[in-house]
Image (cartoon, rainbow, N blue to C red):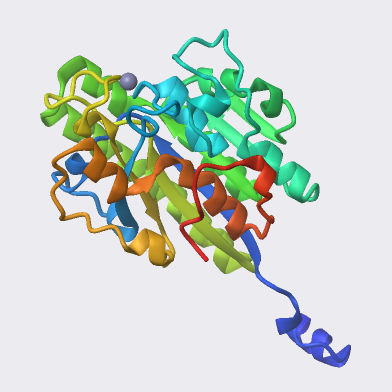
Length: 299
Ligand SMILES: [Zn+2]
């Protein structure tokens, strides 16, 4: 109250301060889109989630294996393998494309970034950009990553935060779809809840407006065990947002049955849309020469 009175006294109104926009990207490894609705997920359910695709455009130079390395680099660079040049999970490669971390720093040097990657290779594949990130950790496990992210958002509140969670992919590789996979989804739902809580706390406490996004890197085969190939199931991913998406985002009909890869690629959002969506939300103008492979999902 004191602050309001002071502002009026100075001839200002509190409304002169625009809300600070911030972004949290929650990356969930190996979560099959169709499996989310099979579990009781109160926190996933607070998002609008649309079907997406990964693996580049089938039978073109952008086609890439539906593995974690190329997919996470696509999520964080906004381009497919023909531009970022990552072709496997091997950490001896380095992305040839700029990442969201660099676009944010170059677009607005005042903004701060953070990366918490349970699978360390994500930060290694992007190491040319990661050393410029304000705060980063890699390795450990999902519990450690979640606690570190919650604590960092609470105390620092970077303008862009990325967290990668790995347990659902491990459950898939070990057991396929079923009870243990579902249990891993419930655990991640709870971790999403912890992250949402700290974001909402900041929104109440400070004048901030957070875009929170969910994304997975790849789908899985029909049994849920493996991935890497070009099949509808393995190419199916999802993108979730806690805001009203634009027409492009909302045009996706999740109930439509996908009978071919071609149908999937023309009736869902591309994995490359994550970077332009974040940049657009943070009001960083997207340059044509960056040759990003998709358009933003928010206006
Ligand atoms: Zn995997």
